[in-house]
Image (tube, rainbow, N blue to C red; front, side, top):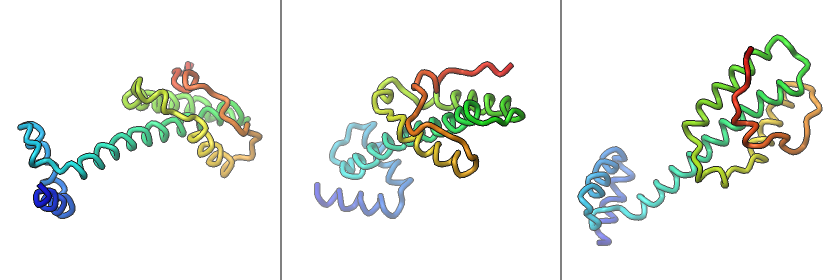
Length: 143
């Protein structure tokens, strides 16, 4: 068993696509002796973290555009910002699952969004996120 892990780890490091293929075959065949458990666990954890990261990035983009809408005096870009928000919500709906909702900390994407806005605009923005998740995931009327 230890020898197999060493061989798989080497394959994991040298030919990742082939490693994935072999792991998929072993899983399909329920061949537990040929699974690279350590690297499989790392990959599964990584995938979960990537999903949360993608959701946070989309929330950041939504927040950036909401802050522009709510705090910027600029009027010519408002329609564009609303369209962008709705497009980001479309993407978010594809990624956000019910099990993720409790893991969302809006302060993290808000702080990043706030920093981005302040690099480009001289606005008086709240220190804490003024939006709920429901507000950030509600489509805007673009008329």
